[in-house]
Length: 410
Image 1 (cartoon, rainbow, N blue to C red):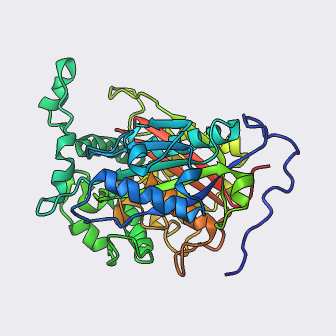
Image 2 (spheres, one colour):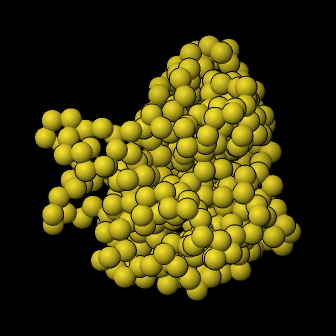
């Protein structure tokens, strides 16, 4: 494969970047592990997590004896907790905790792992997510039926008004965004169509059959304005990454994926008149922080792996990161810019809409493969030096951003 990597460090001032708390040193992702994902039955979340950790450690060329940190993001299913360390036979850990900011958790875990290895608090930290909400002979929609948001007290008016699920609240956010900026279902559908094109190139994707825009429009409504194909998949499976120092990663077998920057934001929007709910997300603040730490601008990003629990979140997040002006992402998607061959390749594995749904691990796993240059024929983007990864949790409540690079941070 031709080497498309360019010298991203030339022209940068010597010494630490402004806002870099680690004095110019960098951490790197040295290994990644992905289990079988999708409608995989008969396995628990803990079993998926066990496999994902072992796969990531082996991919890094390490053994479990080399691991001294473990960060765990449990999904919806019970049974995945700190006991995973004993299950794996890990000893003498210096870092062990659960992290829960829902879809933003993975970005936060990688940031914590990077800070730990750079400070000397640990030397090799595994970040893992796993879940098994799907049950055989049960409807896919039942997997998140327990996610009802029945409010009490003053907010019980929301429940009385029918806002009893995550879908209802994201539909409210999407409807406000669409009304404010003139975005249409054609624009949302363009996101679903482009990501299905990417998924067709991904052997791990659950949905690989072409999705014409007409089929998108004919799919049933979930909660208006969201069609079935506006909503993410539900998957069983697990994924993990190994974070260590750039120096150590350079001696390991896989191409290091360097962690240039990170940020998180928890805006705490209230659904009230005059608020910004649905119009601006935590991506605006977390993205600015991560890019400042990395010393880049949106124009430096080659690959965008955006948390896509809904098509709407792709559009609003791209805008908040500065890849286009507010209200313009719909037309950008309709132009084909996000799809294979487009100017702004986005969610290159199919994302959570067509690939698989492992919370924040879905965009991270794809970003690692892209920056390594190992995404495979057809899916690998020609320029892949810099990737931006987003995570979104709750009802736009939590956001995390990572900037990953093919070379060490200066």
